[in-house]
Length: 350
Image (cartoon, rainbow, N blue to C red; front, side):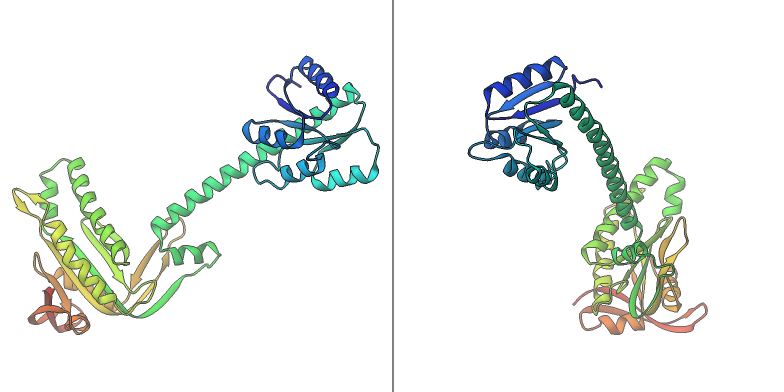
């Protein structure tokens, strides 16, 4: 075995033993340091990396058993190989060393050939252990990366359920508030701009929307082109879901107004509805968390039938918010699949 890359610490209160071992191990190609007692050894171990420790048992101030205990109970040092040395052929002492975690036990005077063989065996085991630890660290890093990616796709409670092995995740919610938003005339704007500029503008707007969703503890569901969908009250139920959505809607208007097309500020069309929804995970390889139900369809219709720069809501949402927000009555309008519906425009806070 090539030894020049390995470092050994000799811990012994005998000058003669330290010098003999140092000379022999340096001759074999090892890097060697020494310590005269247990306390100084621990200080050196914490300052420098070693591959093997040769540790005498009978020493003043702190004996070898105490040093071994501190090494093997340390989360940072417990994998460090330790070979105990003693002039006593004591079975009780040998058993105690093994139980404390020592890799080997040698009786003085040391046979140099046997010592080299025992050190080589420790180094081989250490190499395999180091490879194992590196592999486990790599696995942990990949798991953390996978978890971060999963949390970018799914709400944390849903991700946890998926990791625990739930095959089908579908939940019903009696009350939730759904928001759809669409940037007015963004398609026309896109046809007149380079792709990189379009993507950059849309990304800035949607990133700002994401920050609002986080601020109000809402769940972003998806984006489709220049459309944005978010829900309140899912997957964690809450009583103020409609108010949280209203606050986000009002701030979305302010954000979009900072961006211009042909010298004019962008406008956003927003539709909101409140009611029961079903939420769950769909897909296997490219799964997503999505919403279904009449409430979702009507919220989408509110956006489609709304006006540029306006927040269009159903009567259900209006009743949830009228105590705290100002509205203008739009009256009855025809809604596909629903007939005539009374709707409102949310105009601000009271």
